[in-house]
Amino acid sequence: MEVICIDTSVLIDYYRKKDKINTFWYELSQKYRFSISAIVQYEILRGDKNKDKF
Image 1 (cartoon, rainbow, N blue to C red):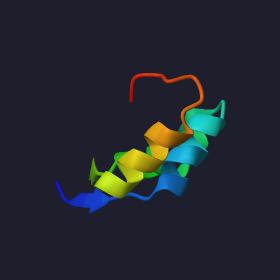
Image 2 (cartoon, rainbow, N blue to C red; image 1 turned 120 degrees about the vertical axis):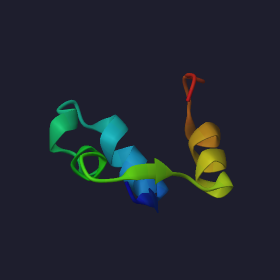
Image 3 (cartoon, rainbow, N blue to C red; image 1 turned 45 degrees about the vertical axis):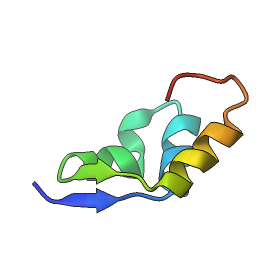
């Protein structure tokens, strides 16, 4: 299975929508494995107001 690197906007779209099946990330997850860069991880952790486990 091919690995792709996803951007913060893809994760934001997924976490903001209640219907997760209709997100871009869900669609991609049916075909690819994922990786995120250290910058994306930093952006997510800095923007997490609830300090949820990522």
